[in-house]
Image (cartoon, rainbow, N blue to C red; front, side, top):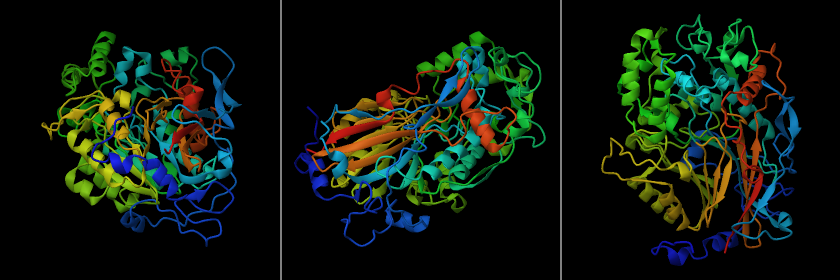
Length: 583
């Protein structure tokens, strides 16, 4: 039995049936209608799909919507997926078989013939956990690797060419593989950068909007990170040092560091895009309040810590995992203790951590408008209030709701404050005649953090179970779409589906296409289809071009020591049809 809001029970009793009866948005394929239209097949050519509020659309300068086309799985994991070759240590990647679509009927029984009846309600792409990384930053947490091999990613210097290749994939695929409906937008669900540094935010905004990205911070003449430190703890791609990654089969690649710090060019997404906030977009290492703290001074300083003893690393990681040090006092003490052992590097003011208002202001900068909208969801109202949640129009019958699940008090797990939870309740009530998609960084099972927000100490924090209960009271909610766990996982939540998507920093480096259709038989289907970047599966260690580096990024991630090999999830977490009842 699903709980309903007493105040809205009467109008919401058959909310999905009402919305389904209100009319289709587009045809599935072959009738030439774009996402967001409500015309019948014989009607005049449709207007461009609505992708944001009227004001945001006017600011965005969005291109005219394309007509739908014959569905195709080309360029998606339905056709092929990167797969390892051979056995042993370091393994090369090649073209592997695709992942078939799985129909999930836990929430409603699929009806026969629905593929001939369905019309499209939405078609878009989710990016999550890009983790664009300044690897020469003074406060990278690479030193945790002495306590756990998986605590450092040998491939993280290639995050920029990696994300540009993902942008290129979306620009080529262009349409949903089930309906043929053009993508109306892309939305990120947080951890867009890795260390809350201004330069990482600029890279993120430029990668998605288009332009040139310079990965080389600090001294423009020299790389100053752990991969030329001489410490066997890290992969040294150049030279003969027998570090622990080379012992595991990692290759020697001369010229790698110069290539990894070379300028990258992004075409930008060819559709509008929206931004959602993650814990790494606010907190140092995704855990500790940074702006205005001792940590902020370290971030713009001239010392970089590269090693701590294993016992100390494990102690610090235990504090992070248990949330026992949300303010980062252990880290501060450790940095002070080891100051004399730190490497001298070139300071860079672009590494300064941003406040939420500064983060919003960067999004509102017209130079990062791309295909729009200006602000990518955030508005002047967000700038004035410092809040990082908003709504946007997906189509005539669907709204998007982006929420902020990061706890400013610290700790990598999430929660919502009472003010935001009440806003979410009011918003869903106000839009009860539209379907709603909820976007956040944290999934429900990672929302266990009740550390008070220092700026709102009386604003109680609420966990994932409370958010689920609230969403179940609103029958117009179709899905809660999120990231953070770096894992594909899809769970039925009684009245809606919760969809978590793997990251684009840890293998298998995926994003997710989502298409929503009205089946005109009392059900709605949510189709999820995973995509990889546009980089070739097979790497060439001599190819240090931008595309070659993106290919290497994937292969290095697959071989990363200590990495979790189950992040792709089960077949039912990947390419799916998720059926919902409208009754």
